[in-house]
Image 1: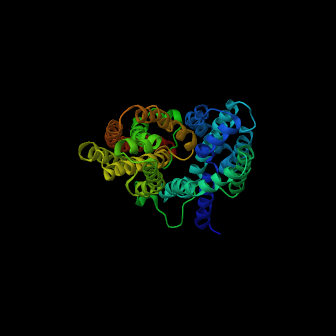
Image 2 (image 1 turned 60 degrees about the vertical axis):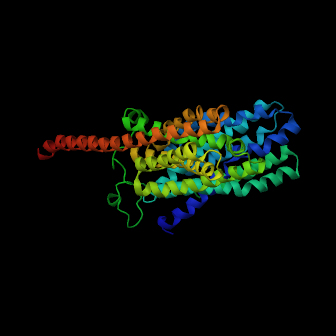
Length: 422
């Protein structure tokens, strides 16, 4: 089978791996039973999310370095074993710290290390459809998570929580390792049949030859425009995802069921958002895609605070717009980092750019928890407006970077010519 056909099978396997590494997202279904059996406070167990957020950049950096040395396939297998064991061990402690350490810190570390290997693998397999493929990974994982939640809840309901979590660890770790065996990297320099990168400048590497190290990357203005643009795109979405049900109840006066409807809407928007953003990114490029979805969030926020307060349609529009932007930024981040700064050091560079999520997490959820609904949406709109400006600056900076590299290449060629003539 040719690599052009095989890559689609590998993409499906990567989506399954993405689902299998989502243990931390089942925490909402685990905290009640764990509190009842172990006596751990629900507040203490919420530190699993804190650990996940703060370990993510470091995990991607280390995962990226390991991927460069041993390849995506071996990394997924090795870290998949570590991931499954961490889940199983997490419920064997009497103190909640053990659960936070193994079920939060270690399991999340494995999840993000595997995630960056997945993105690297998919990015190299689909240079012609990079945004679409990475978006499909995010969409498939998000929608698949909603589909498998009820079976997991059924498992937890049918037996004691400790053996249920151990079973989850064995199954999720086993699936990750099994699928990882077949997640091979393409040959170096792989290009799909009939694909010419010169025909679409939006998916062409800025430099066909240069791969930036993280130190070289952070010395460019392009990096900072990308970083802060991503922060602005995430703030509103983080606020929505952290508290959408309560926001709906406060803004619209709906019941718990009504709040759940808007939470479902947010989940659906996040699922489809990655695919939509990825498809558009292939056509428009990184900076324009960031600007388009930031403008969507800004428009929705302005409509709500001016004419839509307390109206279900406008609140729903805000939820959809900001969640699409929030999940879409993950696609913009991965596609942009690879397209702008190269494939070779992608993993580590992705971890550095991923610091944007940490910085956004210090703002979005805090605003959602302490401000009113209209004020929270307004903050999200202001952040999106900043992203629009940064997207424009990012586009100009990328053009300047191209011009600089072309000039450096020309100087290098002139320096070589006298030696060739001699």
